[in-house]
Image 1 (cartoon, rainbow, N blue to C red):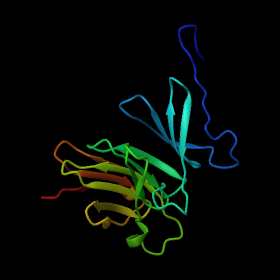
Image 2 (image 1 turned 180 degrees about the vertical axis):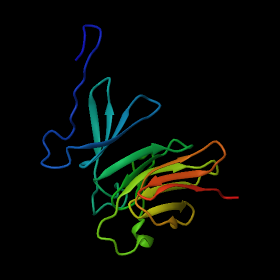
Image 3 (image 1 turned 60 degrees about the vertical axis):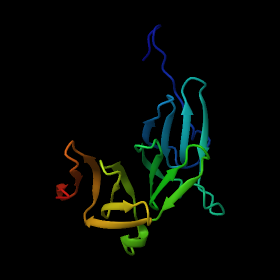
Length: 178
């Protein structure tokens, strides 16, 4: 697979885990670290040193990430890391490594299975997310979510005009604030 001028790195942070061996997402930060969303927590991987730090849910610590099932992550305009989980979303304070958790289940209803698939930010710095039960917008000041669409949504983006696009089972949706 690799030539003399190329190096193929094989890294499995979950090699000794009985479950959660799957890497769902990869996000790079400005320092060149890779953030891996896995079924066994969020992993910060330094590809130069090949060392990693795992962030896992600790039910006794409200400052830990909300779940060990991390499906997606991204950095907002303030360079805060956001992680999409099966219990909602978590935002990490880069200075402390502590998380603020937002529970989408407060408005999602009595679903037996809930999965946040993607997160993005609009030009007004609102956080939007898609889940298997809809499109949601987070009011960061109150920590409350508002639901806009009831569909199994798997993708989201914000275009250059600030319009939020979401795609899912029933098709493509556009949300324009004006």
